[in-house]
Length: 154
Image (cartoon, rainbow, N blue to C red; front, side, top):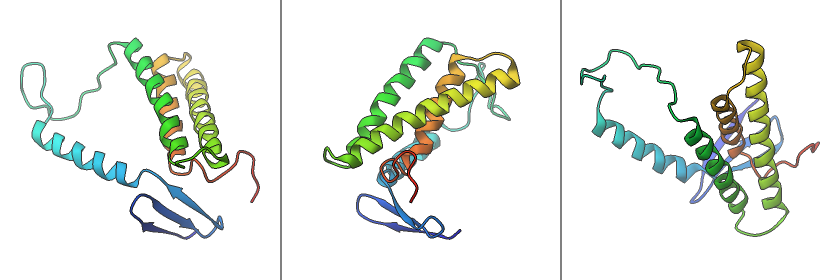
């Protein structure tokens, strides 16, 4: 499989020769801006500190303390992703409908997969795991939201 990237003003074109199709990645400028801002913020904040102000040698694993806020956050993200993926076509066409449909299918599939894997491996499911799965599905779908119809055979 071979691939190439081509930057344009508002999109990143990704051509994968094995698939014989061309995908449009709408998030190129968004990732550049957010990555630069995150790097600047991380440099300003410095290393992570413990409860007593000491610099920690390794990153601690914190558990979420407010599951309600995690769920509300993923609901807002899921809703906003429709505007981003579906709205990137800049019109109301089949392209934007496919993007919105694929966005919902990806998030729902990620959510169900994560919950199922949690149940298989841990013996219980969690709302935070469901939110993580939905987010993973949304992120995985973002690079090609509009280019493929569900169940399409090119």
